[in-house]
Image (cartoon, rainbow, N blue to C red; front, side):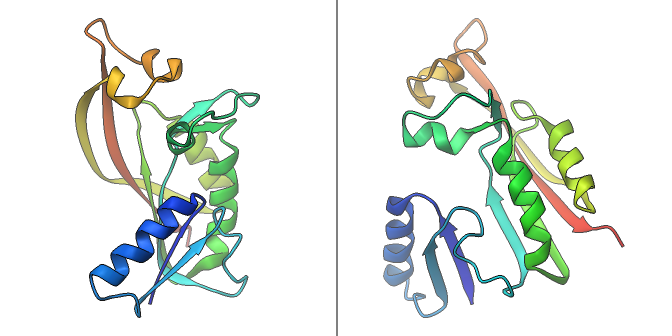
Length: 165
């Protein structure tokens, strides 16, 4: 059984529709949840994946549109909370995978949080690409990362975390 969670109700509805469309709705549980809030305390998983909002925004900043919520984490509070809560939901040999960006995220802080929660992290895979900043939305936060040609150079980095044994 796969459990999918998202804080965005539209994403939750979309996941349910796709599970039905592909005939796997009996194998997919979809919950609206802020990280692990809708997951039972005793539920454990072999694999936990989070496509994290990897850009560290100032603590006082708050998103104005849903797209910003998908990219920006004020004070890295969500990352800290995720890495604190996730180990309790892992099986003994379970793994955590985090969708991240080393070029735009704060990897040092991420690995510090992992260490505080007795997790060891390593890059599992990485893909580099460029996107015009105008395609990322109207936020000045995106434009601030653009080069002289208006391109934002990104990476999708998949980081694997395991318990320190």
